[in-house]
Image (cartoon, rainbow, N blue to C red):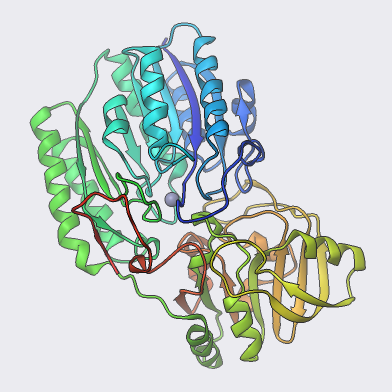
Length: 491
Ligand SMILES: [Zn+2]
């Protein structure tokens, strides 16, 4: 029986976003479960669609001993505060020191963490860990949006990325990573490995695997994998990071050196051939709302507006109001916006109660690009404490806490107001406030792509909107200074 340690440290850093991630953001977790240490990991993270949940299952199924370390994830934001990073890394190292002899280590990482003084957070985590554990095999699962650095590759033995965006395969990826780690631990050897960096930055909205070219690309990846008996990953990268190793990467691991190199090269060719098909288009808010109102006249199913540039899942503030203002000014009916972060107004709505009317300046208060507040007379339709359980393919079963919430109405537009940030990618954010999404005409969601997992089937059309916000959809609007010299921007 082998002893396998498990832990995790996830953050996706938008270096263009102002809000930093502090220790408290990791401890509370935001839309994620809070920081878990030791046995709490096994008590609280089982059975979820999280990489570590899948890894736990695989290690238990193989009959090996689990040694839980520390696991934590914060909502994507600006850079991670260095003191917070140091403290979490110190917890990880302390737990490793106290865990006795280990045969393998599995980590649940995102792969695009930057701190206030480091551009390659995971590279530093893996390097420090390697120094401490010597030759013990280290495996990590990664987000599809990982920016994989040479350092991460060098200091780990195995890294496996998600294959879906929306990320419905988070637990599956953790499971596959742990199963491979177990194999190498049992056989007391390490895989051959190959790593290739791509040179094109892709906007988030173009990376969906429910549409082309993503869908075909990952089918071909699996075919190349089967033909060469290797494990392949294609991480498409998190483009909102002005760091040297930003961008896509290919990772291959196998029992045969030549087959590993061949498979990685084949995947590189398939990926490069698909590049011209990535669609980076987005509409401005007034134009998108105009089109949505027109489309809604002839449709029974809702039109969805993806407010990608204020997606808190990509480091957005979740308080911009460009789409909301366009919906109000163009007189949209049966429209809903999910959700605007404004704790003061959520608290005020609780204070005055359902039925009250208030003159409000909603949202638009946080730093960064935006459209100011959406001012007007709002009626309070409903309030909630913001505790509910996810119901969609990504977050089904996960306990969500968005703090005090309120449902406000202005004309034909309803707005969900929250006191914590979370991407609007699960219907429960609407349903727990009494809104039946399928009965709405227009739904504006602060999400780039993840919402598609739960909303695509109920939508008659989806329009990607580039309303001012920190999660820039048009990469050419950004000023990069630290990319590799050969990088080009897809726009
Ligand atoms: Zn991601």
